[in-house]
Length: 347
Image (cartoon, rainbow, N blue to C red; front, side):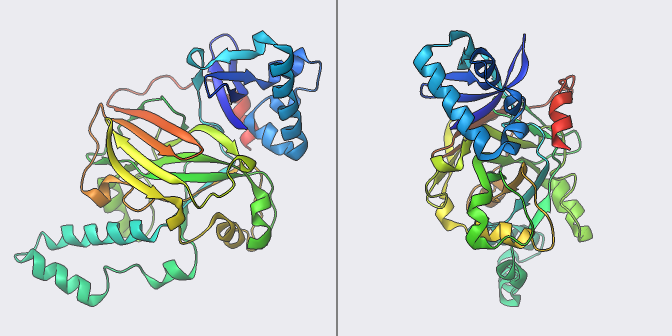
């Protein structure tokens, strides 16, 4: 299934499933009510995840019922609904750095810019290369590396990304990730795939100048990543059974219609199964947590030395998931939408 959280003016945030080639949404809670079936698992995406396989089976049965019996008021045309992030407030967010080429590209660009400040940039960069500092550190090959994100700064597709007031350099990052459907502690990689509920696209928007400055303090990232609208997910949450091989997906980024990035999940050095095993060492994981892949090689402006401008339209596409689309704006922050029920489920 291709699950979404969508908003309607008269009904508020609802949980649904995309159908008809993503042209329509089945309101799962309303479909359950019309079918006189229990609807509590469809109150939010987190309650659906918490419901486990039984809730997913109920959702599939409802989709069949809607298709068979034509429960028309449970079907919403896609253009009449605004898609929120599939899980508007994840229980936890961790983002990893699993693509070696991204790390190599980013480090090379960093040291080239440092070398550019010297009188002989090429010689200075050659010195960096000889010293070995341009190469990925040994720890990256020894264990998955990650940081924790701001779970309250999440938005969905077709929502504007607001340029943070303290930043001059803004960047996209082409990623995808998983939501956990099962938790646990000390989960072996061989059993970790059973913990994956589904997959979504992730744009880890980054204020590069702030990030570069703060990480000189040997901690972070912080304000380089954490600002309202800085974590973008969607357009849907594709259940794990719809993605037979998560490590064979084409990943593409377009800025204003121009392709900037084309990569593949096949180049991940660390798998989500290995990530789950590592993070769950003596630490309990819970359903509704998000784990990001990190940026695919060539998947951000930092690697390309090209950055975003106000008004730019970012389209991130991952095979089998869809296209995540957002525009960059410089404007005052709008009023925060009421997400009380969603916040309660995120605890």
